[in-house]
Length: 498
Ligand SMILES: CC(=O)N[C@H]1[C@@H](OP(=O)(O)OP(=O)(O)OC[C@H]2O[C@@H](n3ccc(=O)[nH]c3=O)[C@H](O)[C@@H]2O)O[C@H](CO)[C@@H](O)[C@@H]1O[C@H](C)C(=O)N[C@@H](C)C(=O)N[C@H](CCC(=O)O)C(=O)O
Ligand SMILES: Nc1ncnc2c1ncn2[C@@H]1O[C@H](COP(=O)(O)OP(=O)(O)OP(=O)(O)O)[C@@H](O)[C@H]1O
Ligand SMILES: N[C@H](CCC[C@H](N)C(=O)O)C(=O)O
Ligand SMILES: [Mg+2]
Image (cartoon, rainbow, N blue to C red; front, side, top):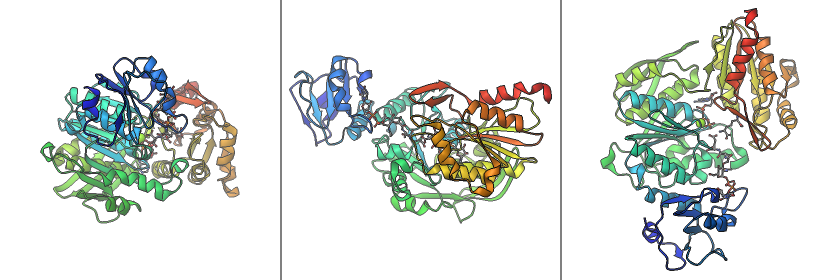
């Protein structure tokens, strides 16, 4: 599409020169600029993309999207000057890719915990119902048999629209995406027309970025505030807000939206309400009242928190018109998400789970869930990520020390921080009375080995915080490291003793 045609619907811009190049793609990283690219210069948290405009032009960019005119750029390269390049790059990508989100039913899932689990479960339910569905989130993008790695839970906006276009071209009718709070603040989902949006819960995380829980909640509520705007009804059902009514922040999300609301929960009265739940070591059985009838279901997902995730997925599937019996079949056949309570079985006489709990609430949930069926002790290996919310460290540590019989504190992704100082932050959360339950081993590999060597028959070892990650970020390096591989090796090393 020609540059002037691309920007024409947006009134508030200025453009330099008289050129009108053909725009083939939009890039926000100068290193990806190529002939035919429009380079969008984004002021980031670490550097300002405007500093790389000249480099983008050298690499072939034919136009620039900027917040101020950049001197020294060739006159035949037009500069489109706008107030907010992050926002405008999203809207232009939506237009360049021919509005892919309007050709799909896009479901957005937000909340502190459970997004990956819910999105993958929804994808499974929709696929069982015969709807081809793409997913975007922490473990990457997936459609059909294709899996693509992604740098963030919600990628930047141009990438989001590009992926949605890929899903349309691959014949998908639906897309399910995790919408993180960072993404909402940074407008990574701008221009996406959502068919429905779900809220799982809000507990402490990311206070380094948002400052307070109120601001964190306000970020999440942005997804509900815009729900249904510019929605094309010919595409299907009206957009719905799907809300976990048992969460204390539910009302904030409900107040933000003008869309119809479908609530789910276990405690309070809800449209989708589980009124008979049995948790077992193998998962859960549940009886769920819905506006269209009663559903008896069984799931292999472990723990009460996963019953909430299942209810969110049931609600979304209902909004998308999936029949109750198909939902029940889908719940029963769902294989689970990599790195979320993933069972590692190397023939050992104790349980080993790799889990992604990386918030105080996530740690409490996974440890209390395994406690319900553990016949022996619960041992946890846990660390906290560097360069992220420090205030959650002592709380995660305290929760681990309270709920486990033995907690081995170790490194997660130290990033730019000294692993020992992260351990010191964790230690501060442990009350003296619990100190005897805690050990420290800064080397994660050794910590996993120690936990597995320590386990006796019927104990359960939970390796928390890194889940599906197959790397460890130390300084600026990303080294291969996979908790599941490490656990298997540690078990194999003991095999003669079982
Ligand atoms: C704090 C934050 O959100 N950072 C995100 C942000 O980076 P940034 O604003 O710091 O970018 P920057 O490095 O300053 O660069 C500014 C601009 O210059 C460009 N640039 C830079 C260098 C160069 O040579 N040429 C060039 O053009 C960059 O491409 C960018 O457009 O924009 C980048 C591109 O979209 C993101 O990858 C990056 O995520 C970083 C890696 C990150 O760690 N983000 C975390 C906090 C995050 O977003 N997490 C959420 C939630 C996770 C969850 O709990 O689910 C997520 O959605 O992943
Ligand atoms: N509904 C829930 N409530 C509380 N904790 C949960 C819930 N679902 C999952 N968890 C815990 O949080 C961890 C992460 O789950 P999941 O990956 O589904 O969340 P997420 O919201 O996608 O996380 P992220 O913000 O990292 O993308 C799980 O491994 C589990 O320990
Ligand atoms: N999506 C989460 C992942 C945290 C996982 C943990 N392994 C860490 O590195 O802190 C975040 O961006 O905070
Ligand atoms: Mg996720």
